[in-house]
Image (cartoon, rainbow, N blue to C red; front, top):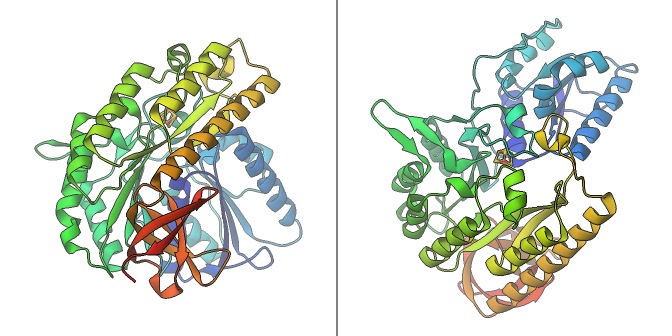
Length: 443
Ligand code: SF4
């Protein structure tokens, strides 16, 4: 039996698709193509209108293909969660709609397809089930979901509606998975969740929070078990909500070298008025205080962020506050985007919409400022000695390798394929765009 899987959206979706692929491997299904797949799956994203439109386009495309050849079509992920009925109504060619809480039913779907029968899925599913992480054989990096859903209800965001309330994963399952990944040769892991800082596991006696989980992981997989060739050397985590980043977490980051000196801390806006309308639950002053504490406790920490411009009611003065915040913090890079209303969110109904042209002009301004800040920060790093994890050969030359520092900086240097997946000490020599050129210090 053959499958064809298309994945859109965030790292969480990619991690879930990796688990889906593992399920196929377990059942001896192989990857197919449009010409021969028995089951086509689209793992969808609904965070932005463009992602949603693309998914509707792919559904229509495969529905048309089904008229030429017989195969089953399944829609997974956030759109399936949000538009369950609508997908069934608008695209009757879709055989299975499995929301984020229903993915455990995929095994049942495969049973039916293998038998040549079909069945109707119940629309409700009891609880979110974390699939085990599987990574491509030979890959040295993996993503491990630790929590799912979000309780924050930022006024522009659809995630709490499509992924539901926060559910945290059993720490024993997380540890077992990390150990299995380490045994499989993985060197770097990213712990994933919509808001990892609010991870909470109710044990038989006490509650384990995110800093507690990080300490537990560090105890089991500390640098003492890492050698040059094997063992998990670095752990990152995504995404951090500023309001839940505790002093305890800062102290873990300061004391455990296993955790990378980089945090993606979403600011969204530097204006208190806009932050309030976004329902972000912090002020710019709080954010700056947090950044000061982090920088003082973790020397060499780099910070990246998300900035959203053109939110309803945003004035030129509000934009200036965002630009000012970017200068004050000195983010190494930012994901920058302008507001697009999402159906079903409170921001959709907000008045004082910012005209499209103004949104684009503001976005261009923050992109230009970020470029300036990134370049300045990178120039300051020339001459520094740092460690990288080698990821691949460089795209430009087979005689060069591409790696990344713990601060999430890209580095290219002479090398060969045998170094992929290894940690190397390098000296940063120069900057080309957003990549450093470097020389190796330890061969
Ligand atoms: S914290 Fe806000 S932006 Fe992030 S997933 Fe939750 S609601 Fe969305």
